[in-house]
Length: 414
Image (cartoon, rainbow, N blue to C red; front, side, top):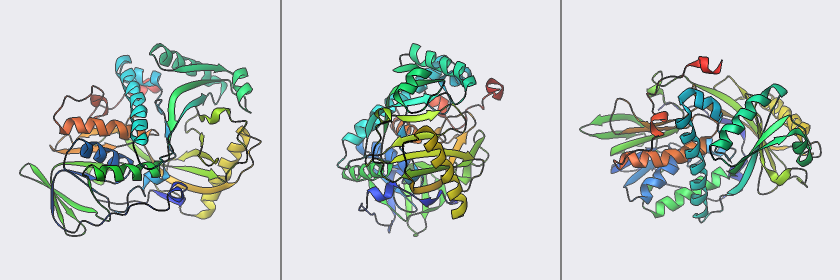
């Protein structure tokens, strides 16, 4: 497997959990029913679901649990997606689009259940999101989105400019408030989930990279860097983004880079209504949330480059822009960045993740969380792939997410 740097800079979440479980390298051959490759959010959620169902599962991670994209994850959990419901309706039909949004809403509920069962405080908090119109011309589409959400049973409100200004220190032309969202500490959550899965029978091996994969006689032989061989009936690649082995086989998918910062603790957040999460209609969009210890997380400024920035000066320039954006929305918050980073961010052509079996090779599955709702997609994947491996009828949304789905007609979004 080809490895690429997924982030640069100083991350916040690992500092919130200074002591956590370390797992051994794989030192001997193993035969299991399912091998999960990847120890981030998606891999651990999938492995947890399998182990909890009593399925013999081994998870291997080439580095350490949760140190890749999961540590750079900003922990916003929303049922709304980068692709608006009205856009998805135009793309796949009203019913299928609504089913997908409902599945995302259920996934947030399932993440809450997982978090509350852990021995570790995962920083899970139910909250709402303010999705505001970045420009006046975005209001008609935002209203259509509100109507689509409301008429399909989602808990939403539409706020006019005066109501926004009465609750926040900024004024926008309009906004949708979505209720039923949440936020989480992704680093603590992944580690807590892994610990619990081990108690359910999961085997975890860190510093165990896969160097070759050979299908043989209905099984899959995975060769590791350590020289040990894994023989598995099923293999799940939960590696975040498209592995080199699939290059060119998926719908157009692009890797970009994004930027985020976390402030020093803020003395008062009194002007921030209920500390709701905030994002906007502009693309790429800005997003904000708060943390348990009173910090502000703000991110965005996506760029069409795969590799995170490597120079400290360039990273600092983007952080300065994020600080200015924060100050424009919340003039009374005077807090500098304590953490700043640049991270790889993937987007698919149709705005959906790739979850499901390999189109050509039986027994191989992928969980590739393209889009800004990766944790929610990982929760979806854990249930969809569990059903497939158990031979159960998959959820109807599985056809939307399959790897060989047809590419969308870009004229729909022209």
